[in-house]
Length: 272
Image (cartoon, rainbow, N blue to C red; front, side, top):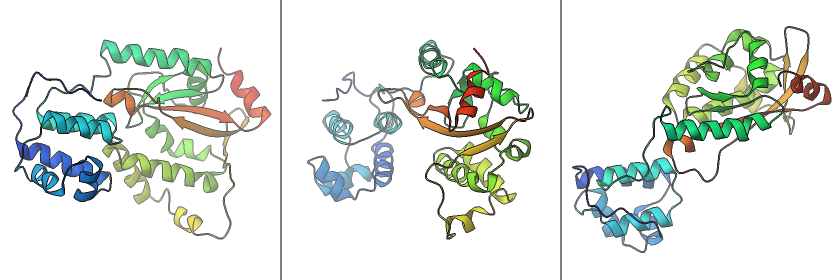
């Protein structure tokens, strides 16, 4: 069972604050009031009273919410914050000692163990960590991703970088849907994606989506480097499964996978 801190309310929150957060969480999960009540062994009337602020949230009900529903750390944090109870899921600053140590572990144990380009991104595609091969590969396109605040979003949407993707017409579908998905979670990505669409970057994609020719099962991104090298790559994106931090939960770890021997040999030699 999830244990809710028992020090009592730590901030002045109203019942309507929690009701708004509960309703938003329920709608995000696609649950009716009755379905949520059934999952929590409660009643629709009780859920309705909580959402309208007519009832006050209790520690017992919070325990059931946290323990019975498949909530992310961000969702748990939002509900705890709205409840007024002490929030055990704080959004730690990226420059805090705990977060720096966690990112150092990701860099040392994951990124530096991958022989090809690899990097870690936050929710708005800022590069938090990158291994040597990743820095070398992007440097070949004139992009420095080693400094603080470097944005992969800026690189991907740059016309020069796009021109280096030799099969842009085919590969663009992957970029389109990935940006669309990320934009649903983050306003920075959504604005950049909308601007790219308005500028015509993805005008050809709708016709491809409904076209007769099926895409390849493994769609490579074929890149031509200035030195003449031709790389066939595919990004592998994942998250750490057992993190309990709002910001760290959103971190994406991206590993570049070479799809032929020539690409693997070239990428392996980019950096020690």
